[in-house]
Length: 199
View 1 (cartoon, rainbow, N blue to C red):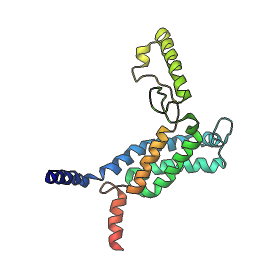
View 2: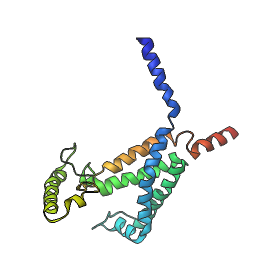
View 3: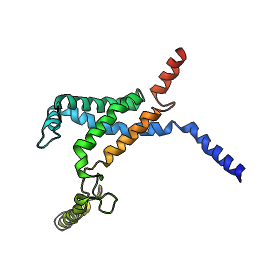
View 4: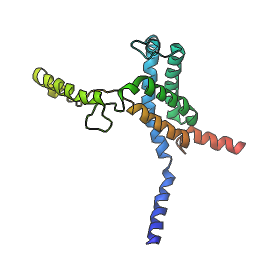
């Protein structure tokens, strides 16, 4: 029995030859997320700066011009670096900071869930109240609209805007911070192989 378990473990360990796939897929998953977030900010920096600084309807952050530019450039540049696997451990740090700022300044007050689902764990009062509103909206649309056409691209949901997505991206970036870009499919791997040998 012990021999069988050892052989099974050896077979499992052999899959580590493909360990570059984890960091590669994490990077490729995050690229469009940060690219869209960053380029959306850059497309209208005046509105982004106003949103960062306004305490009434925005984030009310200090130094809104500086922070808006830092966030936009970090997200856009970070997406490019993640795509090519270049300076991944370095760019993970400011990207994690942007996720922490997003969690605590934008999403925290809404709880955990990004999409309101009363049956899921961590459903707060806001999420519980969303169920009744969503049911009422569906009833109105079924009675007065073309409900089949409206839901052909997906079902209606209520956006709760909680920290769920930002926390998930933070954890993914934290993993990349510790593992790096991965072997073979990253510039970090090839640059390290080249310049570590020359050292």
